Image: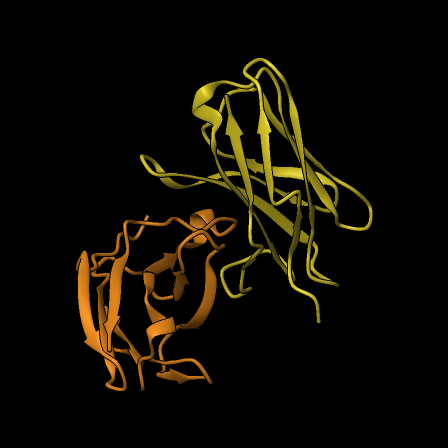
Length: 114
Length: 111
């Protein structure tokens, strides 16, 4: 069974540009969430999607957005990139919502903003 | 959120058992303890989770104290590939949609 797949794995963008990251959850998983990891802030929750609806959002500016499609695949977008957006972006999925449902992570997308 | 406390780092000899402690004194009755690890530059890897009873899988064992205020993750035979940051996380029912990562324990397995 394939794990959580994220593309691209590495990318470099220029300040002011926008970027779209893609995530395919584990087959059958309906909940998809995104996290940002930086050396200074650690792993921080961005948002969670379930049944194509954003259910929760972390403390990030509106430049960070996402969506989920009917097949549970998800994308996140960051507009007007800033140097501080350089980070590892992680997608995670779980079968359903709730504390008893294990969350599995992908390998992440490394974004460098120059 | 139920907070967790872990030692910042620990060393372990290859082939020996690694015992990773975690304190979660404010845990509530229906909140799970999860363990993940993150090897450098990779996404966090799920290890094991438990509610009340001790749990074992092919990767590790989880021992939860009777009062549920602390737990220990046991890697039975540590290898060099177990070198990673290990995170103990309590999933609280009030924000069950996310994982709240702390600083974790950096485990270094030495030959």
